[in-house]
Image (cartoon, rainbow, N blue to C red; front, side, top):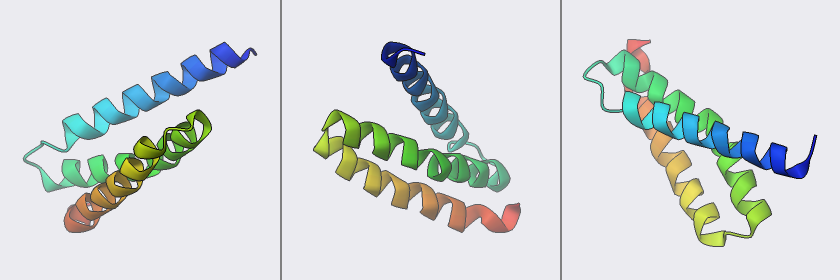
Length: 81
């Protein structure tokens, strides 16, 4: 595997996870919103690693705050699971 392939795969994972979590977060169902928060939290380490490796410190700090927001969404809606 080449570095370019790994980078492209990582970007695809980041895109799909962000789109899925964002889309699901607007659901009227608390159960679906809880899943959105869980998806968001589970993929934050990938975002953090990508930002760290790219030297994008602003994105890294922003990802920490996003992790908190996704965790809050999951915690606020977890009773529906």
